[in-house]
Length: 130
Image 1 (cartoon, rainbow, N blue to C red):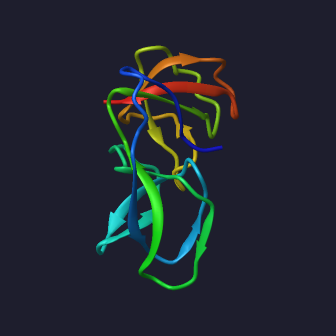
Image 2: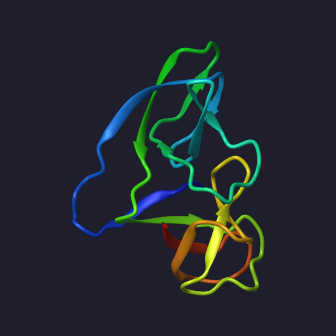
C-alpha cells in the first residue's frame, strides 16, 4: 500500500526533494528514515514520525543513488491501510508505522486517525502525523 496524500489543509502541493538513499528496493508511499546520512527503509515498527515519503519505485544496488521524496507534513492527511487488525483504533487515536513503512499498525505512535473504513487488516485509514 503506502502512505499517500489524501488532502492538504492549504491545498498546496507537497514539494519533492532528491536525496541520497542506501541500497534497497523502494516503492511510492513508503515512509523512510535516515541512517548514516542516507535514506533507508524502516527495519522495525516505528513509534516516531519517519521524516520522508518515497515518491518513486526504484531498486538501488549501490549506495549514493538519488531517490525522490517528500517530507512528512503536519498539515497533510495521509491515506494508508492497516497492516493487521486494530480493534482499538478510533478517530482521534494514534497508530504507529508498521515495519517497512508501507502501512499503519496498532500501538502507540504519532499517526493520528482522522477517519477509518474498518478495523481489519487491509482496511483504509486516514490520518496526520502529530
